[in-house]
Image (tube, rainbow, N blue to C red):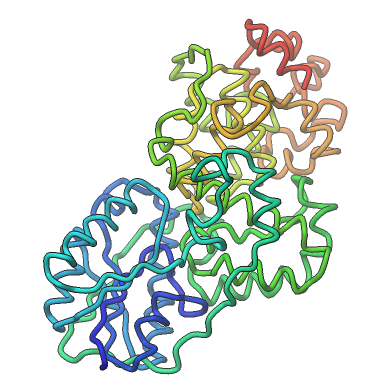
Length: 452
């Protein structure tokens, strides 16, 4: 029996290794591929760069589906209501959607389940977002992992299902209005272009040219030593499972990169089991966060007077992306040195990042703040030592902080220590006392952080 099916695309905007799409097309029935633009996303739930990337990803997905004989139906409003409206229009007896981790996604799935039960429509949920299906890997004593290392050991020994091929043909129900793409601002000038085609090209280049130097270059801030695939993984323009599969085909050299893909899955399963951690601490920590809007504004603008922090924040504003080492340094500076709530920093990142993923963004911010999954909650990063180690010579700082372009190497990471005549004009003094890194914050924990 052939079905009429609605495929609700969410964070899986692709045709390759798209289990929801493949499940809907395998029996040859009519398929209505659908994406619903949620007003909460368009009206302030995401920054301009992420909205623009999404618009390009949707245009690319529509083009791919049309080549297969289908189309992408675009609607705006409540995802559950719009999905049921399309299902009624085509007399669908099945809805297929990808699984996801956030509280929002879990509510959407529950609401879809209730609506489908009421309408006597089958709801099928497929694994489209993570490499390891959410909730499948768990220790013996609980339903999820809270530490990365045991999760990594289990994850890397787990055989994942093989990536599925795209359908060869899609039969689109007649009489449906396709809907128009939403117009969006371009966002950051240097942001990547959205879409599956761009993501697959980047992955192919990375596996051909980049992965072999990953272990040596991944922490060097001035080098282009990371894959920059995170926006494509966030929106599902690339399948995480396929990325793992193709990376592993490169051999042992890919282990470090594959481990980073495992971190993404780890944070997804952590959020799925603890959805409140989008705004609440996973691990309570005895700390009183400072409220200092002026210092927060300087940090967000890349005007702290600490070059490595400012370079990272300016890269974020210019490109909608930040090097992972920069994320750790900037996050540690805000939470450990300035003593400010990780949620304030996470809001800034989420607004500016093209890859603003709830699970990874919150997971990493709680990690640097000592309220999350880090087994060493007192860990912190000395920004000057980090700069000297990972930006030797200051090329990264000079790229994003042009005020320091002519400062000598000896002072580029600590311009406040330069002879007065050699200090750069137009660059602010540090937002904190710079007499010594250890005195930047008064608490014993912050002095310990300065020695890290």
